[in-house]
Length: 255
Ligand code: ATP
Ligand code: MG
Image 1 (tube, rainbow, N blue to C red):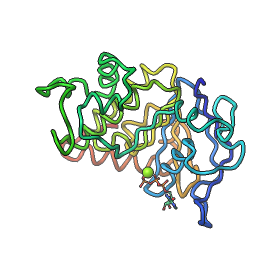
Image 2 (cartoon, rainbow, N blue to C red):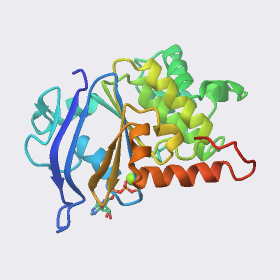
Image 3 (cartoon, rainbow, N blue to C red):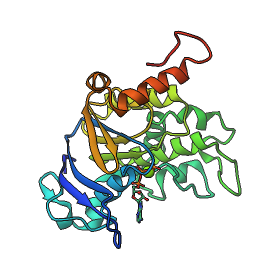
Image 4 (cartoon, rainbow, N blue to C red):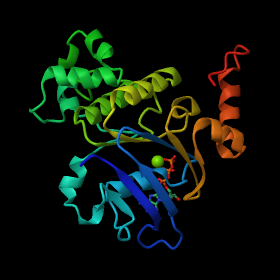
């Protein structure tokens, strides 16, 4: 598949719940494009990611990939098309190399290093005495939250899937590194479609389109400049984050 994701008028309520977690969601994400999703906690961002992975049943013809209703694709096939990097990914107590290759021996160390490089982790790995052979987790080195997230991203990128979903996957990485990683993905992943869930304007501002979720609905959408002019939630968050980033020294705001 090429990864063309088309969501149309998706309504969804969790089993046994009356209120909808998502309502009227429509998104057209083409290969080579990056769409950002921003929203407060509980607004439905992870729900959206989970539904694309088909963790729950959805109405017919609401989520399509390359024109196929994802309900009609074999589950294993669908999930091979999608790389998903969550906020808290699980690291096994084994080497970095195994953690990134995820026990799939078909990848070479060179491919692993390339994926780690995209995730801004290659230099870090190489700075450890045992490099990619460094054992992490309970029986080895303890990684920081941001390092763990970058391992998780490298794991996702290694698979080179048509569709890439980052669900708050860089929240523990510093602002500048996050922006640099996403900028690099935008330039290098010319054929993948990327859905980037995040909360930092500095990272999402370069997306082709940004979708703002409020209570399961799309309240605004557009590019960075359009959304700033909207004076909605996006502009409010942008203003707040620019004040935060310019607190210590004036005029240094990241926006
Ligand atoms: P955050 O920024 O905190 O990750 P989010 O935008 O990802 O938030 P979701 O996890 O998608 O939010 O949750 C959206 C809504 O759906 C919330 O009201 C949440 O309580 C509800 N919800 C999430 N998962 C389930 C579940 N498994 N069963 C029932 N309700 C759920
Ligand atoms: Mg979430």
